[in-house]
Length: 496
Ligand code: NAD
Image (tube, rainbow, N blue to C red):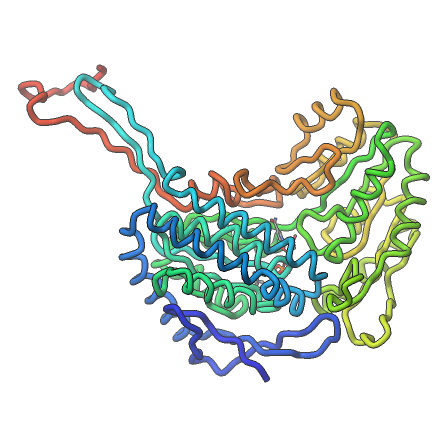
């Protein structure tokens, strides 16, 4: 059985732990490899290497760091096909979708190439007579990231390129469900000239996370995953004196107004609800149909979803692959059972889907519920599968209230041809990322990604300028030259 170990000091190293966690191919259900469950010795090796690497790396000029990152960008571009295959093999998403996700991560690498510009400080001449003042941003030290299964390339790349560009060293703890892509990304960074130990990968599950959270030598935690774990990470890391950004789960609403272009709205909903089998934190899991548009909208979604091609990633015509695990498939199917019990109308049932030749794969078909109401668990909780709930609202105010009253606040979108109404929506919705006639409003690398409410714990979103702020400490210097110093001590607060 293939063993997946850690990446420490510029190479893959066999760990000291003898415990390994099985990694599955979700399309077949087979165990394809095993990933190390790092023990305290593996952790110690990783942190020691990261602490040492930081000393030199933080002294390398931003321009030289940028040149290495630029080279890294080229290497990822050359390797994109094989990186995407690693994602598809262990995650199950279609190859095109996997390639798209690597590209979105690559855009953060591109952004990080501009680090000399991004780290430019502020300067004020004569803040007092003959006194100048300037602010600089300095790196934190050893930083760490803990990432989810659903974007094994893109989500880590929201974090480490910026942290490393800022002069930090970075320890990545990838999801134990699909760890291979991270190791390849680390190898490519070394090939680009990154000094050993600046980027280490420590594999394992929550035990490795707990070691990271309690170690004083690690100064910040970037987390992306489910809300209960995000909350735990935020509280524990903050208690241990670390800076934290912890992104959680979602229940994204897409509002369709009666004046929307229905074909566009339905196409948008199809990709956003069923793409990547609904396992995206920006997936649309609730469509709010306003007024008389509901019946036609549901009929159109149902017709399209019925003919959606569900197949393994090796089939180039696949539009949707399996979900991540047997347990997750069962969880999704239990939610479908629950929706029926709660009284929602099951228009399309994705349970018991069997794909010929892949009978043991973790496939769930596209599922559509109508007449979902806000008291139902299938409305309140994140299902994270290809299950779309349609809620009917009488008017815009009711739709906006649904969006704002929901516990999650990651993304939302409105389809309408009314500019004034869309402006009201973007201004008044209590959500971090908002779209107008765009189904999945994921910000580009040079903006920042992050939700509100139960979707983000901490003060900083990821990447963009927010990322640079998160991964640096602000220092402000006030200075004058000795000859200009006034004679004698001053006991009052200086005011000029
Ligand atoms: P998860 O919370 O189960 O795991 C995320 C990471 O935390 C993994 O590395 C895992 O090993 C670790 N972990 C799991 N349980 C832990 C525990 N008890 N203590 C400490 N560490 C623990 O999430 P997942 O199932 O891998 O990913 C899916 C979730 O991630 C969904 O809820 C999805 O909405 C969310 N997500 C959010 C965003 C966002 O930007 N807000 C992006 C992608 C995914």
